[in-house]
Length: 200
Image (cartoon, rainbow, N blue to C red; front, side, top):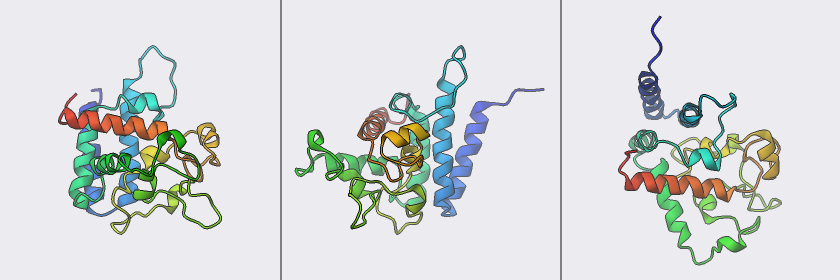
């Protein structure tokens, strides 16, 4: 029996992603996007290591292949007219870094990274601190969402223990504080991939 071709499976998954996005199945497409990133992480693990569940940590996000990031971003950009996608998120992140009102050294629950507010990820209830992020199913899966709102599951998907450490309730980033380290690493990876033109 012939072994499956990983490249063919990736192409099929990217085709599925493009179809979902053009059908405006935003949440399903977001879930597939996170799965594509996790698959890339899983394939990068050394075969001699003990099998473990792949996770989108600071270490693994830093090694996501640029070609995959570029291909996924092209799908999101094309279907949303540039409203969603990794490159849109990077642009917003870079714009918010220049915010005079934000000092990373002083960032806490009451002064979260302005990126989170710009893309609409914050839980904005009068009785909750602004630093808490929405539950995943409270995100907006349509083009009425703020610019850069999606993809999001790459950021929300956390193991239960990591979620607890961030203040969540085994809900990924939901109801937790924003993890600046993971955000920064992903944005640095997107920036590097952009400089490489989608190569590497």
